[in-house]
Structure formats: structure tokens, C-alpha cells
Length: 95
Image 1 (cartoon, rainbow, N blue to C red):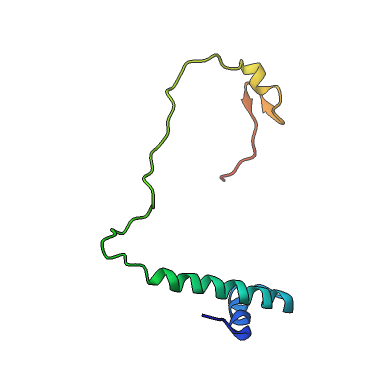
Image 2: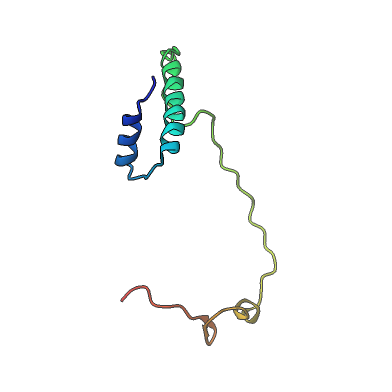
């Protein structure tokens, strides 16, 4: 499916994107190629393929918790831009 120059300009206007004449010509070709690829995909028989959200199975990768030495309170606060006593000082985000 070949897009016309006017269709590309309409898409750009809907997306609120400014395009030069060179951009319009380049995007007309690229978008037309993408649409042609979708046309080819429409012809693939997917009747026995169940709908999925992922094409490959996902698995969470987790690591066991291990006890390790941590920084002291002084080391933790050493590079704080603002601190108040033993705490970080941050701006209020709620009234």
C-alpha cells in the first residue's frame, strides 16, 4: 500500500510533527514499506495459534538474598547534599 504525500502530511498533522519536503518523501517511502510488510503478515495462517501477549515464555530471574556488610551511617550521609542530624534532608512533597 503506497501512501500519498497528502496522507503523510495528514498523519504528521495529527501527530503534531513538523516535516520538511525531504522528510515527507522519506517517510512516505518508509511508511509505505511498513504497511506492505503488514499486508504480507495478514496472509499468514494463524488459525491454530493461540493469542498471547509474549512471543516467548518469560521467567523472572531472581537472586538469593545474602547478608553483606553495609555502610555506616556516617559513610551513608557523607555525600548527602543536605542532612539534618542522622537523616537526609529533602524538600517537602506534600502539604
